[in-house]
Each structure stands twice: as structure tokens, then as C-alpha cells.
Length: 160
Length: 290
Image 1 (cartoon, rainbow over the protein chains, first blue to last red):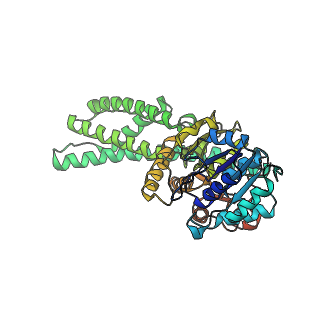
Image 2: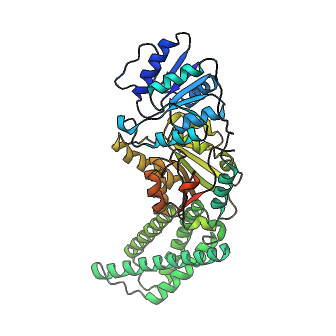
């Protein structure tokens, strides 16, 4: 199953359009899509508007591949569960976010080799074609909690 | 250090209350003399008597002891009981030792006195954490953890080892109703969501955060953002509560706008990227690496 998610706040039509195309290219793949769509009505996939966090967790765990915007919530969940993930950053020029931080996050995590990044729709389709369904592997795994250094620093500050 | 603070503060509370009681006495005396009828009170003996009676009645209910002062409920209870005893003894005193007993004076004095004390207690309730809770070294630290839903919330939850420490008692705040099962064993409150598209909700969100902070009276507020967290930091600043802003790991090139505002307001600001740290912004690892 390919789990697609665009976060809790805003529509991301470019991604949904690309997924709609991918669903045509891979008719056998099962797509589960969570998104707020604005102008674009997908024809090949069903879309959930809102998902409970518990449902979201189950979807990530059961996914063979996650495709999402470059939101940290989804990225962390995928990394914790060792699920391969491709992110496509929301861009300011399309009004998809209030600033360009998703692009910066995506570039940084790309450099660090944590996640696959597609910078536009064509790259996304090419990336999926190159890894689905044979070459699925998670690039990086993280633990369940924050670094000890941060926890200790906070704990010291609380008790100061 | 803490013990010294405690003695000074308790003494300060006592002096404030005695000033309040006698101011009420003087004001009532003055107003009634001027607008109603001359009272012929001997103010020196009245004031000394009221001080002695107040000390006696508060002593009965241990109003200024370390155990009472650290808990606002205990302060309320003790104050109300002390007032009753004080009024009772003061009434007897005025019947026995003042030449003309004036019921109007007594009633108005008691009314002003009770409302003054009530007002001072309500005021101290708002500022409890900046003043009274500092004396409290035995109990758990009352922590308020705030994050809007989504990535901010996911990052906050990764600090769970901190929140699960037995020395902390944590209340969580986020923007969805149905996520309390993610923080089982802790208290949870939902506040209205706020983002750039609904400015009116910002007001509702800010109001809800202030209300939660005044009712749950945390000693420290920790947030990973965004708008609700910034309101938490602002409220903490106004009410003298220690605040920590942890900027989202998604802010790689520069701090978020809220993060920059938090530098001005919060007691400590963390970034999760070492290259963004400086004199005012602390780096100590991030929420990713275990």
C-alpha cells in the first residue's frame, strides 16, 4: 500500500495530481490518500480529508511506501517505523505554505541521506517508478524519543 | 536560599495583610465620620487591638506557615476561617472597650475588610507561580506542554522521557479534541486551532491558553510551537512563569518567526540545528536522534 499524506492544514494539489497520474501508471498498487484538495478533483484515487492520529499511525505502519509533503510529523513517523518515504516540499511560489521552510528541510534531509526527495511532480513520478515495487528500502531509522542531550538539558532547566 | 526566601515572603504577606486590615479600618472610620455620624474611636487602641486580634486569629489557622502559604487552597481556607474569628473577637472588643458601639461602622468595616482580603487572595492566585510556588520544594514540578497538532505535536511527544519523570506532573495542550489517548496518564486540554487563514481563531486560541494557564497554574511551560505555544510563552512572561521554546526541527535555515518572537519572551529558546545556535539560542541535540 502506498500511503499519501499532506498534513493537517492546507491543500497540496500538485502532489495529489501527481498521485492521480501514478495511480494510472500502477493500477495494481493500492493508494491511501489523506489530503485537503482545493481545485483539483482526483479521478483515480479516493481521498480522506482528515484522519485521526491513531488511524494515521496505523496507515504509516502498514504502508510499503509513504509519499508526503515535507512535514516533520510524517517524516518522523516514517523514520521511526522504517518505512521508505518520498517527500515533495510545498513551495511558496504556488502558495502552498507561508514560507520556503519545507524546501530547506527537504534539502537538508536529502543531504543527510534520511529521506528521498522529489523537488517537483516529474521527479516524484520518476522516483516512484524507480523504486516501486522492487527497490523499497528505508534510508534511515530513528529511535522513539528525542536525544538524551536535549532531555537532560530540559530536565536541568526545569529543576534550576 | 529557598528557606530565606520563604521567611521573607511569609513576613511580607503578614505585613501586607495588617496594612490592609488597618487601612480598611481607617477608611471606614474616615468616611463614616464625614458622611454619617462622628464615631469618637480611639484609633491607636483600635489599630493595636486589630493587629493583636489578627495575629491571634491567623495563628489559630496557621495562615502564614510554610505549609499553608505554598497552597492557594489552604490560603483561602485559612484566610476565611481567620476572618471569622477576627470579626468575632473584634466585635467583642468593640462592645467592651469602645465607648459607643456603632453597628453601621462594624458592618461596613467588616465588608470592606472581607472584600479586600478576598481581592488580595484572588490576585495572589493569578501570580501564585511567580511568588508562592517558589517556596514549594517538596512537590512535583507542574509542567504545561503545548504544541499545535501535526509535526509540532509529534516533536513534543518525543520528549516523553522528560514528561514521564516522576518529579514532573504534566498537562498537555494541543488543537484536536481526540488525542488525549496519546498522552495517557497525563492531563490533556484541547484549544481552538489557529493559523494564517483564520485570524479570529487566534483570539479564541490565545484566550483558551490564558484560561488554562490561570487555572492549572504551571511552574514551567514547554512548547514546540506554533501559535498556541507562542501564546503560552506570552502568558508565561506576563505571569512570571518559566518558559521554554523549542523551535521545530523543520526550521533548518533560520528560526521560525514565532521563534524570533520567543527569543524576546521566553526564558530559554532551543534550536535543533547547531549552526543556528548563538548567545540567545541554545543547541542541545534534537528530537530525532535517540
